Amino acid sequence: MTIRIIGGELKGRKLVTVAGRETRPTADRVRESIFNILGDSVRGARVLDLYAGTGAMGIEALSRGAQFALFADNRKTALAALAKNIKNCALESKASTIKWNIADNLNILRSHQPLFDLVFVDPPYHQDLIQPTLSSLCASQCLARGARLAIEHSPHERIAENRAEFQIADQRRYGKTLVSFLIYML
Image 1 (cartoon, rainbow, N blue to C red):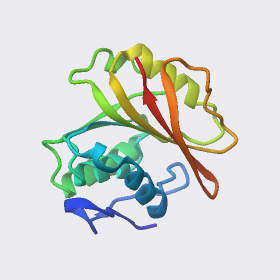
Image 2: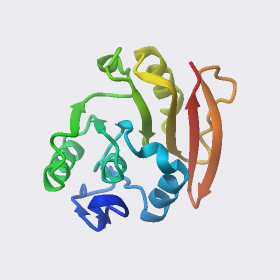
Image 3: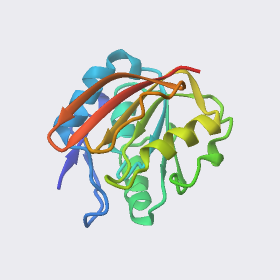
């Protein structure tokens, strides 16, 4: 599968992918739709890309003017591909990676400065990782008030609507993928 950056200064740049079925890159059509919905909020953003895989979402954000991106994944193969993509796109000064089991917690981000104002969450489907990830994001105190989250998930995995910390701003379905856009309220 070939993945390319679809907008911004790196438009058309190919990204290294991870062999096998362990990583499910976001389809170009879905990625383009997400960035169309996010619009100008990407420019100058401090981005957190959780379950980053190849890093396509965070790199796309950097290509479109984001200030900085931190990529987190716990798989060596994904981190190796991500490191190559950051280097091939000459983004070393704007990007960092961490190897972390996001499903356990996000303590490594506790009080990260500056705070993140744009977060991409794309966990493996059907593993009930969304609610623990949202709880860990809140506990880590790494989000700016009004931070926007784009969460890719199966339509069968629901986002709890009774969470005071997050407001669901929009949801869009693309085939087997539901993208939920949340706003951090605290």
